[in-house]
Amino acid sequence: MAFQSAGNGIELVLQFTCRNRIALMSDLLGAAVLGLHNLPLLTGDDPSAGDQPDAKPDFDLSSRALIELAASMSSRGVLPSRGRTARWMRENLWGVVIPDEVVDRLDKAKDPKAEGIQICAEQIQEISGIRGIAGVHFIAPTNTASIPEVLAAAKIERRRL
Image (cartoon, rainbow, N blue to C red):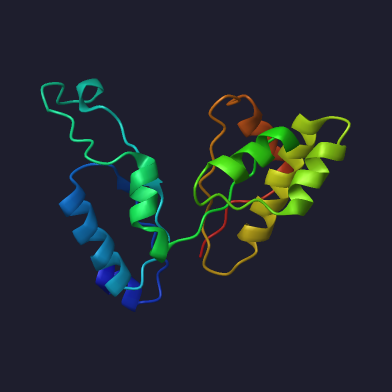
């Protein structure tokens, strides 16, 4: 299916969650061979919370280890809401790339949270202008209430590819 879709000009997003290392390596190699590069790399949920609670979790890799494994196939970008947080992430989280301009904007902002929301909205607007992009994947782990604000500030409309 992925090969057919990629061959027909459909931009795919192939989500990976941590599980068996050998299976993940195989899937990552397959994605690389097919030229797939939109790869959200996530820890995943504990199966005990799902519809098969007796299933055993297989977290052979952490999400960080999975990112390290796939580093040659993908690049990272993160939009934090404070300059201090941005600097810490850039210096301590492997693979995180945050431009100096973003850190400076957050540092100089009277309201860093509002500035972070604005920066995220600008990134969404920029990404939505790229032909073939149907959406973005962003999270706010400690501030989920800001997600509707970001979407409102982005002023994007639902559209067909």
